[in-house]
Amino acid sequence: MIEKLKSASLVLLVGLSLVQSYFLSYSPPNFDPLVQDEYVKTDRLGSQALLEELLFPDQVILHLGNQQHTVLYRESDAYKMVVESVNQRTLDGFRKMSTSALNINWEDVRNKQQGVEVRFRDGIPFNVLQRMMQLKGELPLDNDTITRIWIFVKDSKDEVRTVLFTDTPNLVYEVQKSDISGTDIERFATEVQKPDASGNPVMVPYKTTNGDFYVPLKPINFASVKLPFKLFTADQLKRSFFVDPAITRNLSERDGSEIYTDAKRGLQLKNDQRWMTYSDPVAAATSVDNKADLQDNLLSAVQFVNQHGGWNGTYSLQKVPQRLLPGNQPFIFRQYYGHLPVIDQRANIGYMKMVVQKGVVASYERSTMIPDANGATSKEVTIIGGEALDEKLNEYSKKHAVISIFPAYRPYVNEQSIDLVPAWAVELRDGSYEFLE
Image (cartoon, rainbow, N blue to C red):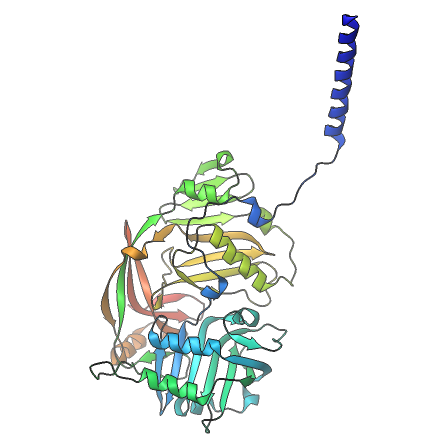
């Protein structure tokens, strides 16, 4: 009897095993799709930011009438006053037109009228600009990129006109209704011309030849800064980018760089350059269309940095994709310290670069240095202006290709610190930057 029970149990177990094998072999697998925010259980390594905190003008130019101008830089009291005031005012109704149809003599407006220009170096699309300014009513369907906003007083101080310039030559938008008043503009002009406690003038006068860029008529002062830094470790980055760091493979290249991969995504560390590049080939291969929403991709880029490395300082949205570029959308965020941007074509520092496709980050490049602002030391230095700056510009071999000149920090990277030295930078027609030596 016992033997018969054993035989029956054995037959039952074999049968169940065969049934299980059948289902394992022929049943379709049940894959649960993973969204990008979920597939990496990340260790947050740095500070987070909102998109609105990455949107600010690189320059504010005040026109004071009588051919007088001054330029305000980020973090100055006058800059904050003007930007906060403009951001709180309402702009409503945007009439698209050509500059010639406006019938405005811009030379007279620049030199004879009081006004303010708010400039964005590479422009901000309408629907993104709305996140920092009070744009009301229907926004233009074309979502043009706005490079500057010019608000000026007409002959009557009761009439103020506001014009938004785009990155398309001769294409502007005139604001139909605004609550910015002539009193606001006059207040800006009065505040910047106030002397200091000793009665000495604070405002630095600037001049321009054609309105493209402005240079000071005398030397100006900025802080020279020494910033200590530490580095992201390979272990920190692996835990941040990969679901299971234990299964990542490590490859060493002849140039000294290291590559980590989990067979799906890759992370390259160029240790000698203190630079990292993350890539997701699956995202890069995703089919795209021309309707990819730029703002959605931009929000995805900001959130990705929040989760993978953090901002660890102040950054500004610098470059957005060209309008005709399909869904593959690159963004560049420029690092600022105090008043000035950090710029150097030769060093891997001062920016983050990302490519986003339909909300998924295909590539992400940044420095592995983490500046310690709390340990910074600084001293005030003077950079040239007036005739000395004119002479430097005239001697510059590429002066005919210059489209902008501005003060910026030139970084010098040491073993454990970064020296940020203020100097005059020029932007060339090909989009590159150089410093006036």
